[in-house]
Image (cartoon, rainbow over all chains, first blue to last red; front, side):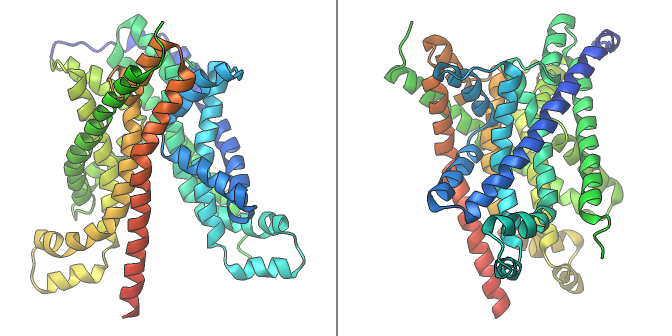
Length: 223
Length: 221
């Protein structure tokens, strides 16, 4: 093999890669929070909403789960502007990621909601709580606890999937790597470092989720 | 400027075949490699297990796009001049192998321990236990999630467009550039993906439901 690895030239631009990684973390983190919010609302509508809304949420979930994130991204970034909705690349990336994650997480949260024993819901109704109160006060917490591992792995998939937003020039880690490899011509080194950074971010998020699970669902709830 | 008409539609439709071919190729090769990964993951030898686990962690913990770039640029370093087809096939097969291996490991481990023990009591060797007793039962459990993964794989092939591989998504981009009508093209491309994936999703759900019914009946007996 005649190739000589040169990581030095890439490490000179390491600060830019860190900036890109930071944007990846912020995009993914924000998309996780907003996507979960979408999912909590949609899971309620899907299980207890009026019939037309149930069907609508069902269609949303199926449409998103059966098309690639990349195409959703293109529709948001390229197709919507002609309908008057204009966003810059980073905003479009976030919107597409939230829409995407929202659909997957809706399906997961719904499974959690359906795993809550009927008796608990009937208890809530017997106590005179409204449907929304039953959902918010009784069902939601155990439902989220039950599906937390599935949610966490979906979040990680989204984090890794976020590398495709480089295709619309959102300047996150992958996009920065693309720029760097085209200026330094050290493609392999750049992408190896970017890959390791993604791996580190994914491991960090997994740790964060484990801590979050312990903090929210385990600590002080053993009574 | 071209208008979006039948010809443009046919161009996109023709490119869809490459999405299908790439998916099937990755599924076949990834399936073969994934079977190996699954068997190694349940091996009794710790180093073998660790190796297979490392492989799965590596490919499930990094973005597919990075894997594509690394294969595309990386194998070139070893003097292998790769065309887009080879690079993409290699990358997607490795990707599919990691996911399928992990799915199938779960299925192998879902086979009750007693089956292993019974086979051992009949003095089957380890490989015989695996091949004659455990795997035939695991396959039944494995079919629904495998079909489900096929949906994920079809969607994942869209990423290959980023490195210039012409399939459904790339054809959509080309037609957008020619007609400047992303409002028509991208929803259409999305609809074509949906047409590919939705039947598979429904099939997976159907298989899953049937398996659950079979299991429930089995327990009643």
